[in-house]
Image (tube, rainbow, N blue to C red):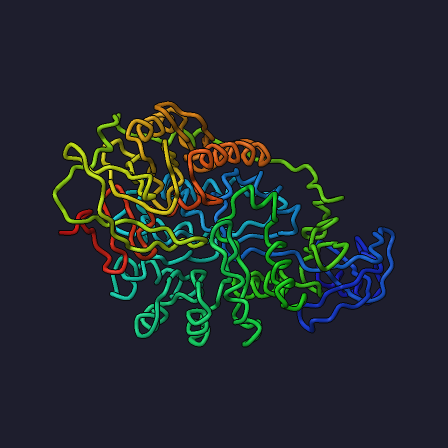
Length: 569
């Protein structure tokens, strides 16, 4: 094959395709220059002056490498794998590196297998990082637990390229043997990190164990310390968590080395409304980053970090993953080539075969029967209680306190002070276990809303100011096999079913977005002020993100990494 490439590059043999007369962006030199691009066997073999029997005139168009998302969770889009592929391909993403730990928490190794099967043969390149923390910590209750033994076979599979975000950083720093058994399977290399606010000796200890990247930086100072110590900084711009503006000075001051763009968690509404990687590149250039650097952070740097040979550039020997753009401002492709084949034309994804969703990933919600009384919080006479305080646009919470409303030996929600009840219901094994607490920051004045998307164990999480409405939400989601629900006055007023593991829908993206918008409008009518309330809700049970979380086992002080009581004497 390479001999043919050489012959085509010399001009002795015709290429399969010539992209003629375009303006090529080089991610190596930062230049934009006019050239023909010769493609053979799905690869770029020449950039210069070429001719051939199959030509596509791209005069007055810009050619840039296909974007690569270096860290994302398909599950967060609430779309099945094929529908996710359609949406991101249309926006210029030709490859993604995914961590299916949401599916793994619900389905175990079968969740990883599902992603591999569902993505096989798609026009989108899907590379899988093996979920490292199922559960994320001992304070969470998933359906399955993944051990080092589960890793061994899957790490040898094609398109499984490493270990995903190592969230249990306290166990890494403590030298936990079970964690080190997992890390050792890769020879302590190709391990994504996850270490929010970690610094000093603790950060050094974490890095010495093998993790080489981090997507949890929220401040320039944090990112600079990690970059200084050799970490790759994944600059995240998700639906809710937006770190680009805060971290972009890192690139402007220190260059593009060891940096890349990632989406992490993007909902379908963000994909359709803003875009995918293209929207991050667009925003970065609007904030003053050069076009060449922005594209490099969304292509070549991602490929280099993940060892995706031959991806991320338009140059001889690289795969022909190419975007045809009318301008370098909007970054909305007219056409997309993946391995030399046109997969998007006139801005629309061309049809492709999709794998059917198997029954093995459905019917995963198994809650014990619950009544309104399941959400009663008894008054133990404490002076005040611990409260999860939301932080706008961040996954972080603050450990707040409040003096609760009381009546009849119970602690009550207090919507006038923006104090709502929070419950996490174990939904995998019908144990009937319910963790209870309080949250501040949603603005909820009446009713309740709930979700089976609850990172990372994905138990059922519900917020409400009415016990009856909380029970109604739980009952609806149990019957639907998972999803999102809103209840008011004792009845369900909105439901988005998520049939795949209680996480993803089988419906088209546009329908999912329409249903989600209806739920959010209902919540606004009930007083909620946040733009993406279900996304905030989904992180409140994640016991490895500071400062205070709630799981089915109780309140978790993440700083001390221990279960703490609700009341404070």
